[in-house]
Amino acid sequence: MGPDKRMDMTYWNPIIETLPTEKLHTLQVRKFRRIFEWAYRNSKFHRKLYQEAGIVPEDLRAFEEIRKVPRVEKAMIQKMQEQGPFPYGEGLCVPLSRVTEYRQTSGTTGRAVYQADTWQDWEWWSECWSYILHAHGYRDTDRVFIPFGYNVFVAFWAGHYAAEKLGCEVIPGGVLNTEARILKIQELKATAMMATPTYVLGMADVAKKKLSMNPAKDLSMRKITCAGEPGASISSTKRRMEEAWGAKVYDHVGATEVGAWAYECQAQSGLHVNEAFFLVEIEDPETGEIVEEPDRVGKVIITAFDRMAQPCIRFDTKDLTAWTQEGCECGRTFRKCGGIIGRADDITKVKGVLLAPTAIEEVVRSMEELGDEYEVVVSKRGDIDDILLRVEVLPNLGGEQEAILSRLKDQLRLKTNLGYRIEVHPYGSLPRYEVKARRFKDLRKQEK
Ligand SMILES: [Zn+2]
Image 1 (tube, rainbow, N blue to C red):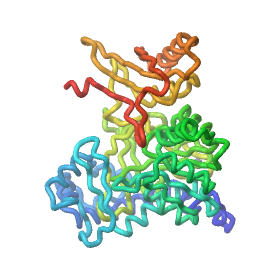
Image 2 (image 1 turned 30 degrees about the horizontal axis):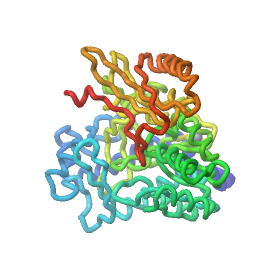
Image 3 (image 1 turned 30 degrees about the vertical axis):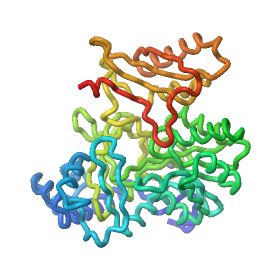
């Protein structure tokens, strides 16, 4: 490696991000064994799990052997923490005195998971985010506005620290309301921000309606880093955000129990998995097979190699994605996957057809005549599954409504192979969400 590569500003870590696959795998096996051994020695929860499966650290010598290690699911962690000791249960690998950070999951599926991190883990979090922000073009000349409620959820906390690490000027947009945040962005001429797609669109809406402002013209936002929802990887939603703000929109994926594990580069043709810090496996949800070929959708199973307090080893995220074709024009050797297309629990069969909510969003947001908001309700009418789609048609298009709806139906049929009942609601009347939206409701599950 010549000095040129080290000076290349494309990468946060030019050596690691361009490591040949073979070397990357060697590094991954070594790191996997190290975290496995750490958990085996220090966590009663993990030791019991591995003893029952008959696996000891010495068994892990080759890449393929990693697959023998049992997976951990959220329900197992919830149960383990419920049994105590309070608050983190027997999975904690360090004395409580070394824990410096408390975060938790939202608890939408059962009891919230408490997440412990040491100061070392916290630095690791911000290092993960440094790869992301650097790839999104954040530099020391940026003034970064972070509009989220700094609270018990991990959200953009580590993004805040990483932006500082990169030398950016960071403005915490904590308890301000949306209007005050927009005015602050304008006053300070912020150039970058991090938010969920729902909030990015919501802010633009508030700017237009309440402040008579056009963010694309009146603000100086140049890049936006999204998280928490798949929107930035759904081309029509991404386009709406970019047009509203006059900024580039980038995606990344992370989770409280895992870390920030994948990010888009400037080529924007998928998300690079940070393979120096994570092992990502994609598993066929029906056969349990590990998927290697591109475009075959499966569940994401993740190991975080360097997180010490509460290790994440072969954690079943239940998020669905697929590998993309190998290689990237940015030169990174890290493997790429597509955006998260949904949760394994959400992707249900409707009328015998697999339906991903992101496919509906893609269609709705691709039609300029429709508003940003929509709602999908799946229910049973007698024995037959029924999909109701509620949309808003933009004002002054009442006359064309029939033509618009017929085009919408055709597109939905083409993209999802299903028929829908469509209801048109007055513009602005569907529920607006502040941070993360819940636009997909499956009433068949609640009826059980
Ligand atoms: Zn790339």
